[in-house]
Image (cartoon, rainbow, N blue to C red):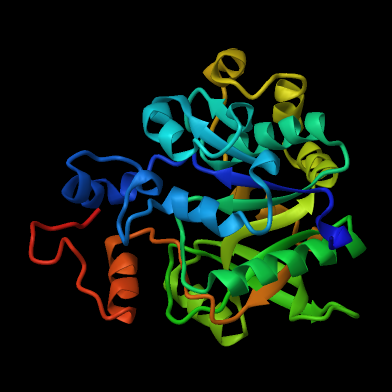
Length: 305
């Protein structure tokens, strides 16, 4: 076995509410469910496709998923392949930061030497084999550079202000692939700024990350120390987390954490992945059109978010 994968865990992020696509998911399912639980293309939901994509890389026993209590009825059947204790439940959605933090603290309790690969549950990826290869390469890089956090960057093919952008720095010496330092991280810039970043070789942030759990918690402790202290020792269950969540302010992992620590980041350039976050109906339609398929909602009432 590749030694860089010996302590690798997977963390599937399934706590989003999917508000931007509620009108579309209502058309497809009859109710405004979060898109990760929706079967939009084929017979698998985005969450089920994410789990299948990871299975050759990380076993179910080493895969955790973080969900919201309000979505458990939808989530549990789709997460039935994971051990029950690996389904972490937060009381409510407080943006991406708190859910990731409580998951990392739970991972540290289970394996203090863990390296974690984090995966959004609501993205579409066309080349899954290449995707797994990139993630394995990122884990190998972190094995050699345990103080860094590796991001997977996708090559932009248009200006999109809904994405985070990574400005690569110098190429990492000795890396086998296209791995770079990070000069800057820009979360959802305006169109002019985004176009300039793309011209200078910038990448979209896919929000796929690999890092040592202990290092991530150390960095979070420097950026959001009050929340790290708030959740230390609290199990990742809705009941245990509820008191801490009552007065918890929402914060975004990209804007409020990654954007503040560029000197600790690395980015692997992922070419030809066919990646999309499917954050808007237009993004989903681009995928259908690339596949030569007609979106199932075309011709029905408006699916704008």
